[in-house]
Image (cartoon, rainbow, N blue to C red; front, side, top):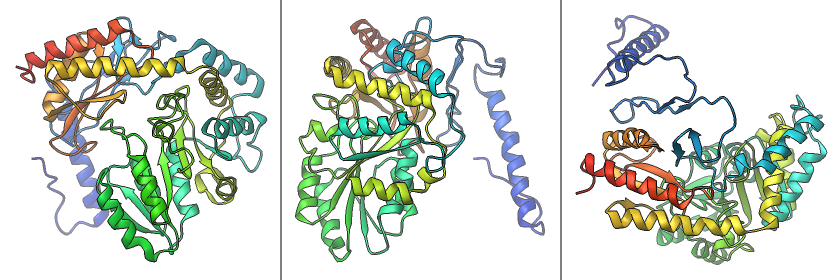
Length: 434
């Protein structure tokens, strides 16, 4: 294992720190030069090139994926002949012609941006219209836009909760929820993943606090599993708690009309607060939001720091997201196509002998365990025209490396079958299948 030797003990703290930085930079360069098959590659971006290099040791190198394209292409294909199975483009709307046209039209009409935060001169009619549309889509009273859902999570807990309150969080919640909770002064409880007995025990312990908020992802992005919202809402009602759900990997495609996990599980009237994103199924550009009671949204407009101190969402992103919501509210046909395609991939992969985490979600983690194996399989999948990425520690726990496949509504049955065939061939090549 590489260890920074550091300067002499007599050196000051800043000198020791700079010495270690220089040491690691030298060794990162050496690692890149010695990476098999990479030494001769130029570092200059090449049109159509995809790079997925990662050092073989868990937790010691950045994961990179570089796609350089000269123009807009088919929503599934990254470059000619390469099928993208790792994007959050669940509904294919990021390249939908009506969504693109809406973005262009909004750009021409409202400009590139407002050079201001919302409360000064950064609010246009399109921002208010989109907030009203989001609230209507989720059947809530009001909504507030942020530059991202990460910002929405960073702004919520600090503004809502005080030192007299408590927040109870699933241990596998997204990093943005965890970071948002860290910012608040509330008492913090962490319950075991999807463990309702542990949640109940924590709720009993938290009865001494003024306000209790249960925080969970609706769908967990690394495992493809879904929070048991019916049980969570029942426990929350029993112990006088509110329920917050991050629907980033659910909005637009889970539930009969794509409203999310609360619609899927029939608890839309029991979930108090929803945060979600415009950067995945809803156009894929950027932006996030909180939707819920009008009084809460009014509070966030006055106290949520990411809202108060961030530039307003660019008009083009607003236009794209607004059109994506229009398409969803006009028809649920694209939503319904997702279930069949997800089932097709999951059933074929499990029949072939792979372990697929989660259930009935288009996030389909192919569990491999070993980080090097996940990396090598992802590299060989790319050679066969399938773009997927291996995930390992620290993104997921040690020993639970995987390749996260994400199904899109614009994947054809032939695309899915080709992906499965490639996995079977490469899996046997690397000993992941008999």
